[in-house]
Image (cartoon, rainbow, N blue to C red; front, side, top):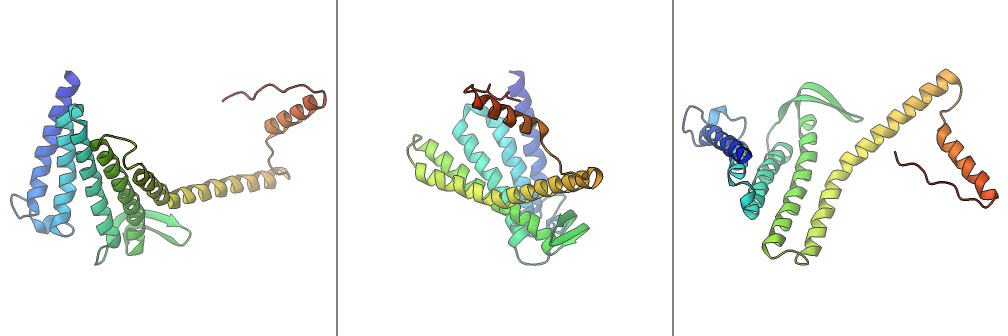
Amino acid sequence: APTQSRHLVLGLILCAGSLIPMLAAFDIGPLGTDDINGPPWLGFVAAGVFFVAGLALIVGPAAPLVNSVLGILVVAGLAAIGNWIAFGLGGRACGGSISLPWLWGEGDLSGLACRIPFGFGAMIMDAVVCFVGVSTLQKALGGPPRLDRLLKLTETLVLLSLSPLLLVLVIILVWNAGIDAVKIRWKTGAWPRNEEFIARQQAKGFLKRFGLKSPPDKMK
């Protein structure tokens, strides 16, 4: 099929292109360990992620269990990189910007400004590795109910790892809503009101007095 051929070609390109940086970890080829911004294994793992992704494209959906194992290797490689940046020894410097209530910076970030974002990502990836690993093992053993409790535990780990990010998003949403409400109050002298919701609730109360049922709310 044309799609399978494209996946095969793309997979071969990924595998071939990742060989040079992978060999650099052993000082083989045009690149060497001096070109790796970190320990040699870091360059090998970073390039190996693309190599394994290429293998997954070559294998295709014909071998789902093999693809699941390759997926675990990809996620584990990304987790290893994130964990080294966030929790490894030595100084850290990375490019980008971060803006938090207790931490901010832009351009070349160093120290905590570099470690904290990767720390969040590393914890999420660690939890995902556990979840995908247990899920794959469950499939290999014949599926549910085997390892159901362990799988639920890993699902909880994923949710817990995402909770700081979700909390930040909620704070941002509440903060933006509060700022918009204050602006409306400043311009109009009144706090914003959801007039459509208020009118609907008043109509329901009016119909209830006469023993009538209100129509269901329209799905938007």
